[in-house]
Image (cartoon, rainbow, N blue to C red; front, side, top):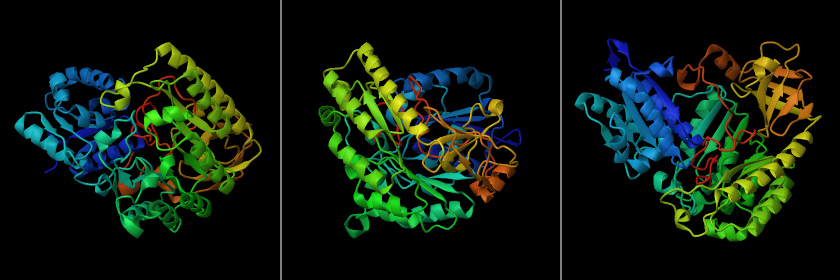
Length: 512
């Protein structure tokens, strides 16, 4: 029987923190709840069930969670029928601590048992007691669960969960577990189903996507990720394929060839550098050196000359010297990233780096961080100005142009992932999910501008669905949607973890 309150279906909202993997998991949580009879709250502030999908990467992630839980306490006191659930990486880590610090929480569940959410809510309501259930290993692959997709034109597809790496700054492996790979046929079936529903772009997700297949072994595992990319090229109706995040250790020539030779694989790569110092990389337990990283970039650019390459960099790792930092600046100058997500190191309890000698003063880290940001800003601007005069194809997006209303522009993503604000000119009826071509007039440090009007406009089934307010699996939504990989935009001084567990991270302690 569907859960009801006074004869009306109970409403829910899911608040997501962290990485694309968390966004993917939240879509599954929403799908599970709707399958169990809950309805998405039109006003999240009045939802009968509030689910927090947490991230453990950011230093103050727990403070943010308990602050948000504290804000909900008066609502819970006024309405005992309201339920609060906490899932995700922080729940996996803190377990019973959550209900001890916030006894008004009804359900705590982890990264390995997302599927249990509706059952735990029912049990908590029936028993009138908090339910804490944390599985130690994956019970059900999240991608096999029902989903409430947030976009009509772009979809997440998880190809693996967990990570086999042992980076000293990262807490993710202990929370997500060892790598588990989906069978290629299952991945392609999901990709094909999305394309059949009109989705134009798919992002393949994994903590370390290019290690995909390591669980298979033998011939099945050899070159599995490159084979998967090529197979995506055969999916009818699928126009864009992206992936995140690869690890330099596992980046092989067959993957570069598959990117170059598969027309719908986008010319974009996000690959975390973390540091340009080989000594720091050793202490981070990153199994590559700066020369290896730069050779990969050179091979990518030789095969895909117009590829836009972005990265993650941590500043102020324990023991980092001025010489180490200078090495990072040298690599950034040579790599010429389209964008770098730069983060100040912060200790994460439970990681080896937290116990290392040489923890740096805040003022030293801040000063280095500002120098790195200034350098990358200059490079990003130069790279974006080099796009001026180019004709580019855009997949029109929703919610990415914060000033679109004031500037009377629309916003879309180029195939290389760059954000483009464009003036429609005399072209009318452009919807999110439609495809247009424009000529770039101006490159800014974090976006491109095309004010010369639209050259071509192609209406798509994804645009029809967006206009009708429908999504794959028939889920209506009005939520703004981004297109998958990192947003090429200005990094905040203390960025929110829009990508927690390495897909790719927007704070230290979680990128792969």
